[in-house]
Length: 512
Ligand code: HEM
Image (tube, rainbow, N blue to C red):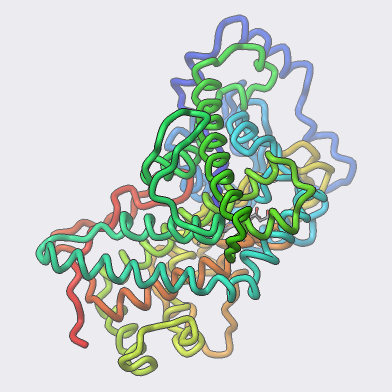
């Protein structure tokens, strides 16, 4: 993401207050009176979903001002149960915080819950659903998902891209060693190194080459790598959670919100300009006969029916998806390992006995179940995408034994599912042993961190390979420690659950 996600956008209270004029409120009241909730007239005789009480007009919006809706949703699940409904302005939303009901939504009821209604920001930034993760489940979705799996993210394609991942691991190791040599007493900022390397990997896989600088014709400027990263990854991630209060009150769409529109439009224009410049550069390379193992080479030869915009969006999508969520899960794993020396030691001993003096590679993963357990437990405790991008219920359906009417939005609260006390013992505790039980297969369904069913994350294999080998190499080569006075810090920020304060750890090279 994904991500692409916590695409659930919750507005700031100030934003609403500024926007609501007296006239608007009158119109809103009129709308609510003339559009009564359809909860009471469901055709079958199933009960309606329990409701979290809110206030007229705003519904539950004011209760969501914490800006971490997954936490609020989880608290509400303790009171209202694993499925309940809330109102975000004029929209009715069902929130699911149970693994079982989530699976029912992803698989059994998929036909009724496979599309999306996008916020205003997402409509612009996704070029109106021109990307796999945000499209409806339609022919376009199926075609692009097939392309991306065939040439990029599926098991065979990942074998072909192995060289790119190996380069990434070597670069990361080199940079960590260089850091210790230059500043042995200082704490390393892993995010800075890992994120930059992930971006390099994304560029090599997508465009064939990493980028150092780029002349952007449409903007008449030359951008350095950090500026390119900002435009392609950071800005759209922020834009995706930017709130236009009119999303919650569609009947007020006529009220202008120019500042918001300009910000998002500007992000769109700059991203388009940079992507166009990158594509042009690579078209020149391809025309000169230089062929590389990259997604652009594949799309230009195998997907010629794509429009220019579809090509641009198909290339941008994996760049943003590669550059964030895998970093989030790996950073959390290293934080937990630095905080739990006994678990780190156990992993180190396992690596020693399996790899000896060889470096950890993808071939070792099957013999190192503890790494996989650490990866899964990190996804459970710190789900990078805590709420699945909202799904739209397009026809009346049933979930958890309740009637869910057409027109409802569905939020699957993955964080809440992974905090279910009836499923996980001491869910707050980070404990990889949960995934080391004999005779239990570990699959992605246990945590659902990658979603499920036909819309499951296409990049789960890549994320697992990079995260597991990254963790393995970092523990094999260094001892990781938090400073003695470091506080417990599990606060998060942003679209995905990035650590609010980047991990700072003391690292000491191990004796080889
Ligand atoms: C730890 C890392 C990652 C996590 C936790 C994650 C999580 C997710 C989640 C929760 C979804 C939404 C599924 C749904 O709507 O039901 C998703 C979709 C998607 N992700 Fe990921 N993701 C990760 C890494 C990646 C990477 C590295 C890529 C590609 C380079 C990627 C590409 C996609 C795509 C293309 C979709 C859309 C799938 C569809 O709608 O059919 N993800 N991801």
